Length: 430
Image (cartoon, rainbow, N blue to C red; front, side, top):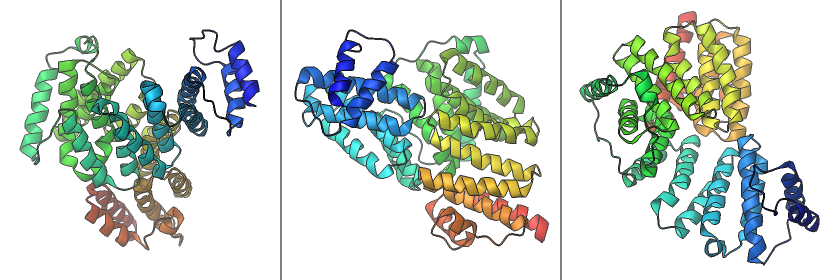
């Protein structure tokens, strides 16, 4: 297998190919992949092979072939060997970062720390570590360790030069949002969209991390969320735009619409955030943006029934681009809107059951509890005796235990959801 694959590569790919990886390349790489026990000692061959496996893995991630991607990254690392960091530092770094990301997407949270530690132990520049720190945060949050994830977030943000106030009160939120509104009022939509692109890597990563961790910050410290959105807008206006600027602009629009009660202004910036993604041709970001826009603000102007169908599409679209968290969020929010619109409860119950299985498979522990609570409401409303917590595979005997757990863990958003589900159920039975 190895010799066949190598011969194909030598006759095609290794002859100066610079275009996107081809079908011939995959045929050759899959032959080499089948020869798992074969190693290469010549540096002149190790680096080109490892680089090609990196390209194949990245392509596979782009088409949501996550298991294949991880196999390619790991095979690439096998060619780098124990002295890979000395042989080619940049290639070793990219392979480790990519393998770390692929482990997360393949629901292998226990393997993520191995790659994080490997990168940290072989790098001194913090910017070489930031991608793996990001994966560590996402892994902690998705497996229910939200407080640890947020603590790590603040540590990393401090390294990037961004700090936040220890205490946030309504007056600070109001003044921050008002100040941000004044700053944006100086720009027309065209002026904002024509702003230069951001080149400062530290600020780019600060915005990426704020956007990525914002749902979990909202769960635990919701009053900090408007401060996060305002910071993203501030950095974007000062240092230039990045794809995540669009998400920050939406977060700001949510604050303006729901906290300052200026719905029209909020919708204006929703439209601008969409145009911003179009400017960057950031198609992979659009499903996430559409998900939060419909779940948090557009429903104030459009019928709930239209929201449920959009969120159902968002689940598939976000999963296809590897955004597991927002695929789960889309499904959860879709269920909430479905109940409120009077959709047949047996269908909602089936979707909750299916979603629980997906969450278990993807090891999205944090989201399982919220779905189980919604599942419980649906089961009660249809008069079923099935146990949603047993169906979800969580170690809680009932919702009271879940409520006690989330309140102790500081997950205010989930606690509010449980109380809301109980109010809805009580309307029918009490």
